[in-house]
Every structure is written in C-alpha cells, then in structure tokens.
Length: 425
Image (cartoon, rainbow, N blue to C red):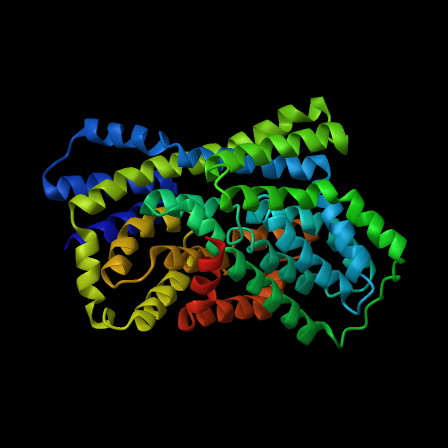
C-alpha cells in the first residue's frame, strides 16, 4: 500500500502541474499522513539536511566549471583540434562532434551545456557543408548525453550522495562505458551518413594539427588532472570540482584571455541559477527518501521484484527497462533522486555491486535526456540548430538505439565495467 501511496501522490502532484521539487514534498507529506507521523519540523529538518552535504558541493562547482570552460574558449579549442585531425574524413564533422563530446564530457559533466556548446560551433558548419541538419543535431544530442557518464559527472555525484556510494569509485567506473557510448555513436554515424553527399573538409597539414593540440593543451590537461588526482587520492570529488572551476577560471582569464572580468557576473549568475534548481531538488528529495525508508518502501519493491532476485542479469534487465520507460516522462535529476533510495537497497539485497549499478543507472537516465516527449537535450539541440523538434527526434533515433544497445550490452556483460574498474581503483 505504501508503494501505491508514494506513486499516486507523486503522479497526482505532477498531473496538477506542480514542479517536481514541490511534488516530492507533497509525496513526503502524503506518506507522513498515511503513517500517522505528520510533523512539519521533521520536514524542515530534512530539507536543511538535504542541502547541507559536503559531497553535494561538487554540483555548483562542476556547473561553474562548465560555464567557465565555454566562456573561456576551452570548448572551442577542443572542437578545433578534433576538426584538424578528422575533419577531412567523409562525414568528418560528425566524427568531430562525437570526439568533442567525449572530451568535453570529461571537463564539465553537463549534457545540456556540452550539447549547446558543440551545436553552436558545428551546426553552422554542417549546414554549410550540406549535412542533414536534423540528423546532425540528433548526433550532437546523443553525444551530449555522454557527459553525465564520463567523470566528472553531476549525475554520479547525486547518485553517490543519495545511495551512500563512493563517488570516487563511480567516477572511475564511468570512464569505459562513456568511451563505449562514443564508439557506438561513431559506428552508427558511419552507417547512416556514408551515402550522404556532403562537402569534405580540407586535410590539415601536420603543422596545423600539432598547433591545434598545443593551443588546446590547457583544455586537454584538465581531465588528466581530475582523473589522476582522484586515482592517486590527491583530492576528493568535491575538491576536484573546485580544482576544475579554479583551473577553468585561470586558463580563461590569463592563458587564453577570452574570459573577461566583465563576463564573470553573467557566468556566475548562469551557474547559480542552474545550481539552485538542482540543490532544491536534492533537498526536497531527502524528505521523500527519509520517508521512503521509514515506510519500508524498498522492502515492498524487493517483494515485487522477488521473482527476479535470484538472477542478477535478469533483475538488472527488468530495472533498466523500467528506468528507460520512466525516463521518457521524468527529467534526469528528479529520476535519480526519486529512484536511488528505492532501488539501491534492492540491488544490494540481490548482491549487485552498487557502483556497477550506479553507472548503468546514470547512463540510462542520461539516455532519457534524448527520449521524447521530454528530452531536454533534444530541445536544446533543436533550438540551436533552428529546426523543428520533431525533425530532431527522427534524426536522433539511430543514435538513441545505439546507446540503448550499449546499455544492455553492459547489463549482459558486467565485466566491461567491473574489470577495468579493478585496474583503475
């Protein structure tokens, strides 16, 4: 019955148009009333506790780092370097988009920011070279959702905090799956775009290629600093976020000199606006998570999934299918905050590594960003490319299928995540 109360209150609040953060509060209150333990003081205490978290401080700093990278010229140099090396291939701008997406994913961790930056740089060039623009926008959208998988990832931070799982281990475990997503997109692009009649870019000389690498050196150095620092224990994920933000600020102001002091107000304001939404969601989710635990909802979900508990792969398959379906209706952050406290106890009971599950769970939610009808990243790509959303939805379909196939490949072969993690730990 508690599961029905939880789901009914959440869906009912969303159906009448309440923002998801307030819907989570309504859900918590509904559970408290059902349990006969309503206390406004407990709600306020949990709200403050939800925001008062050292690991969650990584979220505003990673968001700030992403804004600073885009404003400071780091993102543009990554695209230019990729252009110099593979831009002359047939369909080369598509490969540039994927390579840039993977590299930028290791810098910011924001799917929306990466998609907007890459689309703004590449879509005009693709349109001029006679590319299928809706398909190109679909490819860039699919590349953008690699950002929440490859560290540093805001999604992995939220999952780690909500599920009490090591964020450092999650970061290291996300590297290989993110690269596999990029490879799948490149193969799919080759299959769908090889017959297109598009202009082929000029092949750059070795001097130009080396020059772009040197020019982008400071941008390429950041992921090495972050991953190396995490692996060697130099700093925590939260401290890594601060390092990333300070590094991007320094490079943008004093090395590339594309970031002006006058730009900082707008950069900080944009990061603060996005952060405020995520942090309020995180705070309200703690209220629901506490009551989910009190109401013993995970035990009820475990009973519902009991027929699959003896087979880890089948259980993972069922959960991933459910999350794919939920991801078509709910946005990225709310899905993580709502489902993590429900599912983590279930997978721990079944003996599934919560780090492995977390990477696939975040990958699944990231893919939800390009599944209609919500698909926030699709809306961003459509807006930047100035094409109808319906056209971008059709264009993204081959790449969406490719990423879902990678997801279920990792379900059936968990060693692709767990074995590399043993060497990265």
